[in-house]
Image (cartoon, rainbow, N blue to C red; front, side, top):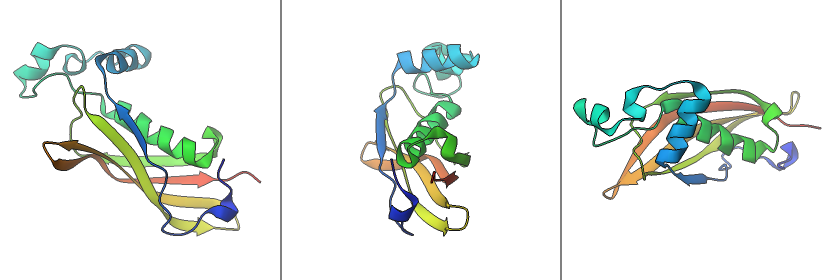
Length: 140
């Protein structure tokens, strides 16, 4: 668990990696009720120009929220998380969520952080999520 007193401006958040699988996306679809064929049917995804299934944007956002939760140490500490979705995530992609501290408020024991998710395809880094932001409140 991170303590507010140990957080500094510019400090990176520990990164969190995950390889996206069909099972992950199916479980997310079942849990969230979003059964859009782009996430479950390769032919439907290919029909609109993707090479195969794409992960839900909110699946990727959930991974980003898990990164923030791991950093702050308690999901109840998350005040808000926002993000811009920028690129699709395909099955087998390794997504890496991270960020850096951009603001501290000792009076409220809150920190803000810039967030993003990256992946690498063919030697090129892409940002499925960019310009994300979180505000967290530390216990104590």
